[in-house]
Image (cartoon, rainbow, N blue to C red; front, side, top):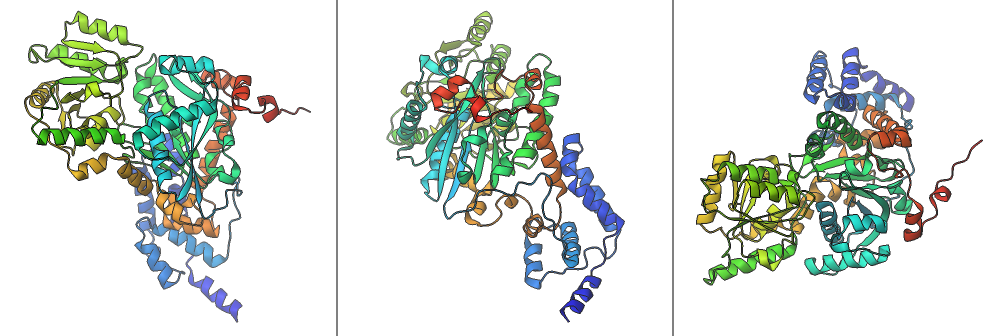
Length: 585
């Protein structure tokens, strides 16, 4: 009797026609089209056209009324996927896994594990060292999950090149103590997360740290639950090891840097940028379930969305509140004029600053600007300003929270290479005016009344004069909150879908897909073309990065396929030849 009912049910489902099969193939080929540079709009229109040719398409729904209703109410519900799923479900077919699948993952426990992996560490005062540190502190503050921050360990010879004031550490434990003390002085609470290290090497030419060996191996499998990759493209350019999405249930990438903008300024920059653009997209597809871009100034990667998930050091908000209170009591707290602060390299806005001041030297007669910064281009920048006889006063770089900077009223930042300028957020938090360019990197700040955005060089002059002749408005409680790490953490939890993942006990990785994909993945009904393409890209990348010759030809630091003996000594690791033995027949 049950068999006859099943046969009747199957017969009620119209079979897939050629148009539907073609439409589904095109839809699932999206990752391939992304790599080829074909716009998704073209694919979507073709799919829509093919589906519309079947008059009774999607008419059958084998799901129960309640299930069907919940599907349709989901914002990401896709009727074509539902149609395919219904046909497969009616046949009783079950997909048992694919060529690239790795079924062994972390078993979800009551308290989840979050690993934050970044590309830099204090005392190097760069955004990828500071912001992930605050993210770890505020994610761990809720005590709802275990949090581990993974930072690179540099051998002493590299530390001397990277860390300021000749600061070096003899062991990871010493550096951890420094990091934790620095952080707790600023957040004002006892931090409850773990700091661990992975081997890294410094690349002098591009002033960046490249992981040495497989970074993922330094996270135990029993803790490999959720990964947050700060600068996923940077971490994975030369990654030769376990695929992050195979080892972890949910992987979120946070894009900090506009690499294409920097690379275009180099020799043969256009050619290099072309290849890096596609490699970045490959990395995003192959190694992340979700990608968050801090602003529209970054590359538009697969599975990405724009959201500022950074806040400001609480000390800056405290300074802003104190200055506002002083002004209310009639004190003159901002007696100084304008300043600019940033690493002294041409790409950080110094070229734009000098060009603007040189062009409008007469219009800005009497306007003085103090400049704070150190960097490789210090001599060139100061020579150019002196040659043009610009009214710039240069000072050594210092922490933006330094007392000597609190008295300035106007922060001038003409940079268009930033993704989301931390110094701009800090200046606004301290209650200052900010004069900045009309650029996607400044979109988040536009809503603040003290942010004066200019569109032309003439408008720059007008905004500078406006800021110099009136007082900034005190921040409202809502504006202060929006700049805080509490708000940034809330935005991160929502847009990375980490809030959903942490509250679920099922298949975490599928949370980043749509509801139909989630159902299909759980029931293992159908091989997903997207997963197959992503797996293929990851495998090709793995093969490519396994060749030292190919790595060196694309700019890798020599010897980063594995960590070296000094790393073994410093970090108490097995020698690389023992950790990764090579057996020959």
